[in-house]
Amino acid sequence: MQFEELTMEYNKKPVFHGISGALQDQRITVLLGPNGSGKTTLMMAMAQLKNPSKGRVIKNAETVFYLSQKNQVFDYVTVGQLLEIAQLHGRKNDIVSVEKTIKNLGLTKLLTSDINTLSGGQQQRTWLAYAFLQATDILLLDEPMTYLDVKYQQVLYNMIMEGKENGQTFLVSLHDIEFTRRCSDNIWFLTANQLVSGTKEQLLTQNSIYQYLGVKNYFSSNNN
Amino acid sequence: MLLGCIFLVFFQLIFRIENQSDWQLIIVQLRLPRLIFELGTGFAIGLSALLLAATLRQPYLDGSMIGIASGSELMIALITVLVPSSLIYRVLIGTVAGILCLLLLRGSIFKYHNHVLFLVIGGFCLAMFFNALTTILTESSGWTGKSLANVTWLDVGWLVLIILVAIASWRKNSRYLQYFALPELQTKQLGIDEAKIALNLQLIAAGLLGAVTAVLGTVFFAGVVINQLIREYTHLGIIARIPFVIVFSILDVLLADTVAHFIFYPTELPTNAVLLVLLAPAFLLLLTRWSRAV
Image (cartoon, rainbow over all chains, first blue to last red):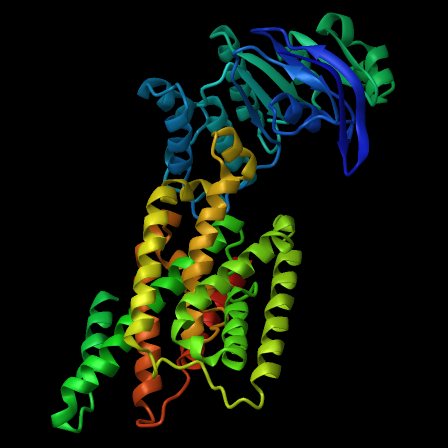
């Protein structure tokens, strides 16, 4: 999957201009960038949920699913009902993988609960289960660690790794450099007029983090 | 609820028939069409509120709050002044008016449906504007409207036909209704043509509400109170809630019209006003539950 000369606008103001990139198959790419740099907009364009002002997204037969950073339901919907919808449209109809996903994300006891009554972390785990049960080759996860405690951050890490082993491709937008270092194969830094891409060894450096995220001495201050 | 409906149906049919010789005329020409229209009215108010709330993803809205019912009432007032002979088709005219109001809303206020306040305030302004026009038009015409006392078999026939059309359209679109509980982004990814289905379901809602409002008049908030009350106490999703909302709505209309018809018999009270008064405690109950949740 790739995109060429992509220009996106929000409220008629350019978010980014003329960027190009290619998502490597069966790899985990982490999208980094400051708030408002257009990470969500880029992911939505890649999922063809937003039309670019200019440029194009090119994909072959791959299926793409995008999980946004904020999700909500608008009526009484239980966790079980939401996951049933995912199963209906998903390929993971085998009961073993469905049960495994539910168990891993600690949702077994919440299946009959109304999603609106759950905590932020429980809701996020529900939506992650919904995403991982989808029939998709490419999973675009927009800040999936939001509200997750340390235990479920590790569960998410394991699920992403397992998905990769099973042939899925991931693009994950994150703000956590340590998690990025652990799970990524490739890094994308998004700025207003360029997408800088490379391996984590090339890009997860002091200079890049300062240049693209504006944080001085990130690693040395973390070591202290 | 069902038992209550059955009891009220029989009560309305046979209560206070003083002139034994005219009982057939009273039942067949007056009470039976009125009763059937009440059943249709309950069905229409309940279903239209649920459909509009679901498709707009705004649980605290119904067709009365966004001007559909008031628009239908305005059209009936206009017809009364301009072509009074057409009033025999008032149910059909109300349906057309409801649909026209919906199209007006879809071309304007619904475009900002993600901004709840804009939707509520914009819709309410439109409803009040239609109400004001209706008042001006009917001020000195002697038009009273808003009564089920003069329901005819022709009204019933049109309402039954409109309900049948609505049910036919509903059968084609109903399986998608549950997806309106999900964010728009997700329904898109499920490959659901949300714009088309929302239009179809909203047409059903507007047509039904317009039809019954033409006879009953506007009942502010009734739909939203009924829908929310059932939601709060049953904890059921959109689809599973439908029969309960419809039966409860029918019960409310039957009860309201029984009170309107018989409490100061032979003087009639406006059924829509009685319905609103009867639902006031339910509205207070909901407010209490919501305030506890906050």
